[in-house]
Length: 144
Image (tube, rainbow, N blue to C red; front, side, top):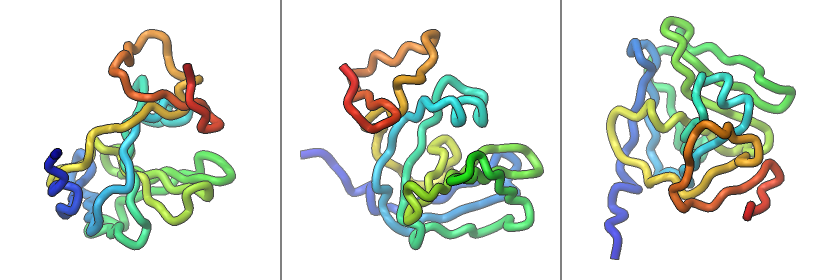
């Protein structure tokens, strides 16, 4: 039986320069790699690994003045540190009761391993993702 004790561990993270800190007091609901074009461009990466937590379990513990929100679409915004530029958060109407957090920003605590690739229909061909995880398209349909 797998050890899932880390799923209830408090999670803490921060931006690169340390101006923005957050704390999560509940286990992550999910963890996945996102391949959408907006995440790729905002992070300058082939894909971004996010985890989602209930909005009520998320706390900005330091750096409210350093946190900048950008409306990346009419239905979503992205939070980043305006001092160092670290992309940290995603919050959108589609998942209004969740805060999505860039997994690489964690400093304490553990989150489950990613369980899928999402928006895989827009992935870049130059990044190898042959990890056996299920792949979903933009409409959340399982891809072959």
